Length: 368
Image 1 (cartoon, rainbow, N blue to C red):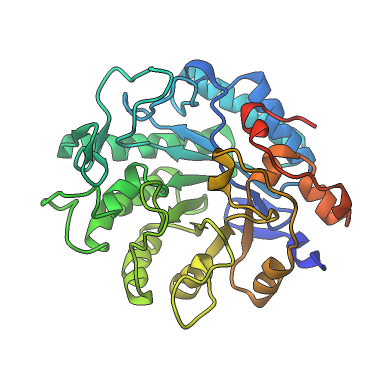
Image 2: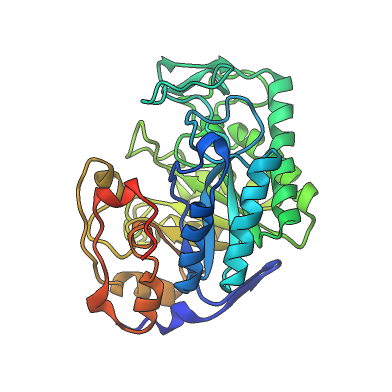
């Protein structure tokens, strides 16, 4: 298995990274009251020391009262939380790494198992977090405008604090994705519509505001998924033409990199081609893409939450697609959650030392 091409530098606007491996965002819930701690900074620093090219933070929520359903999810607003993130990025830079925050609004959520609730109801395009399940309020146009502005402020703060890029979370059934999906967006105004392209207006306005706040030279990433937690097999864009109508407006609005989430990166997106989601996104938009989904492990991530373990797996298929030029960057999740030195081991050919993944790793910030 030759992985040399994964260790070529990548540069795009504000991003100058030493290799093509990206630490994928993974929710950790170790920031009490929304404040990232010194342990969180140490956790990310260890991944930078382990030669990760680009670290994308766990989702960190924007300034809306009900943007989170979890007391321990980090905020990306407020003096104390931003001071915590300043410590994180300083630690990562001191270790020679690069990093961007994933800015997030959860939208309408299930109530957290802890019993904690935000001070205001969850909010979304239609009060739904899956078809037929209402657990929040329908956003007014004023709510939408304030939320777009809050995304912009978070992006501006990311640049001010010295982060290398910013990622907008537009996947996995959270707020931006709730606007995309007809199962959760029943609006009849300009933020709704019968087509995926019409329902993308909210996302394009978020991207435009983020771009306005960070300027032309700061790298902007958006994470997207076809699947939803409520429907793992869903395809919002069922054809290349529908995907083109979805992605090109996002590209035109200011996206530099599409982070394309799949459960399994090797699965083709459409019949008649073996291109995966990231491959199609690159072909359609001409923009750089990140592939992600069960890289380096023999079991997929959703099973991990049910307690399933995974063992290290070959990267041969990943390298075949990468060397063919299907995508530019590779997102790695659970291997880096359980082993901060995973990238270094791959680089040095120490595959016999790779660790598997167990659910226990979800319950701690692994530092060695």
